[in-house]
Amino acid sequence: MACRIGELVLDCRDPEVLARFWCEVLDFVELGREYAGEDYAIEIGPREGFGGPQPTIILRSGGEPGQGKSRLHIDLNPTDRDQDAELERLRALGARPADIGQTGEEQWNVLADPEGNAFCLLKARLNPL
Picture 1: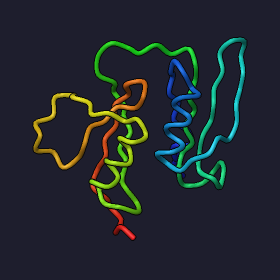
Picture 2 (picture 1 turned 90 degrees about the vertical axis):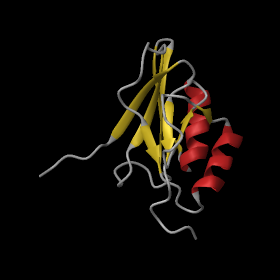
Picture 3 (picture 1 turned 180 degrees about the horizontal axis):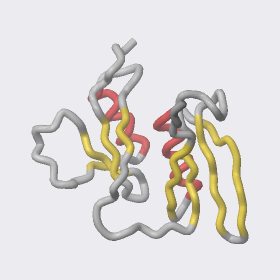
Picture 4 (picture 1 turned 120 degrees about the horizontal axis):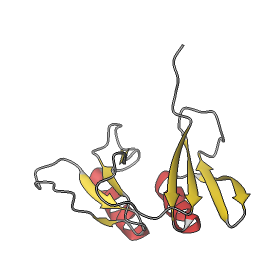
């Protein structure tokens, strides 16, 4: 038997802002909230809920950005449009270009979410509808 990724946890300054951003990007919904004093977490995930093939994302308050490059980032694949159209959509949602030392020859785009967390937009692996 093997494991699967059930959740990704991201410490952040403002879970509300990131929850809205990532719900729009991934077509996720808010699945729940948990409070611990002044700190809180918002869990977002697929509309079908927990336990499916996609992991949920927990956005946890109280996280200040660390120094240096993050060792983990999210790669996105467009599912219903080509890479250029998805790039335009993500930028309209608030993503911005991020420079992590790429050469300009890459077949992906490096972006940052509203708190500056880098992620990549890859070419579609599925045929656009």
